[in-house]
Length: 529
Image 1: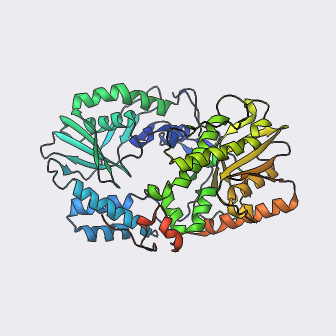
Image 2: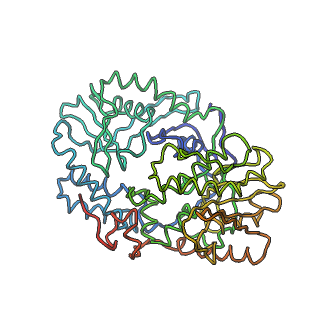
Image 3: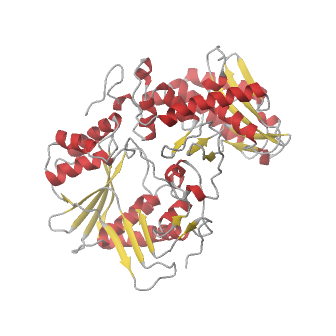
């Protein structure tokens, strides 16, 4: 029998185990506890979860896959296949225009990349590895299933099986060795007969149109790879040695066990909206800022459509990120020593490439930070949390909230939320909460005591060439709290009620990082290049 037990509120049997190769992806994208429980098909949360309609299809690569099915299996023209794929969704759902553009881009790129590939033909059914026993094994399981997701092919003589995994961009998420190893097992062993002599796994980047071979070898080599890199990883996923590892985050939004998760705090009413009729989504201050600029931009980002890096990572934005990373490294360096004004000329963290003027400006801003470094007030390392993840479920709005303060530090027993911003402007907004929704969220959480006991506060540190502003917000001041609650509600409610996320074209389109996928963008529209 398995060595771990589900939390209170989850029950069922362990007789059927099913995993997908994607569960073995990079750990920062996964919740091990969710994966371990979800792999037991008989486990269910006892709390009834009411199904709620979703207007927009929220799987960005779904239309691409449907279009390719029509092209490969039914010999339909490309344009007809795309129109049909974007219209043939789950009943009641529609495909957002940005996803239509993305699907078209991916289909044309895919067909071009494999136009001369005649070695294999498409397979209608994705392969699945199945094993069954008459009596339960040591895990209490009698049936195992492993699935792969991608485009499946084999040669006419069935000697070669090929799986084409999809990724958004060539330099995007890296497949783990375990993913490749388990996928190789499925291709090498899945029925029907005859089993292949050779297995090949390739990855196709939908944005770039490039193909990378991840594995190409004999069936024996595939099974050997599984024994080395796949079997231990699968056992770790299913068995959860040491107990269930809960990692609350964005995945909580569609987790079937979220309602009973012991690691997900439940704070009713933080967002100021009592309306749980919408499907559960994840919201953050970043979500709010993107939505206010353009609802379609926020939806496209949430669907993880590729960003235009030249706009997403402009010089001033990169300098701001570099300053934040520098401070993150110093504050989390394992000492509680405050920063000083001695900033080296080569201060820029290695992952950033700044021109000289931005490098010099960044050093000047960092010298100003030393004047108000919060570590002057922290007594020990236990009193400092650098960029902690704050995740909770607002049950009144059925929304998972994600926040990441630049710093939490403890001053005289109470936690202080510090946000750090860089600016070359001399303007000071009259309503900080409208400009920075994370400040409004922080004030509300502090006032409720959700950050911990004691009289906490919220601080905004703005680094400018001329000096540093330190703005302090006292959650115990009625006017401050009322403004924070009102601003937070105004930020959240329109997004929460929206189910179409229509574009809002304007001057901001020219600097929009997802305008390539928008048919309404000012200054041009996406193409099928």
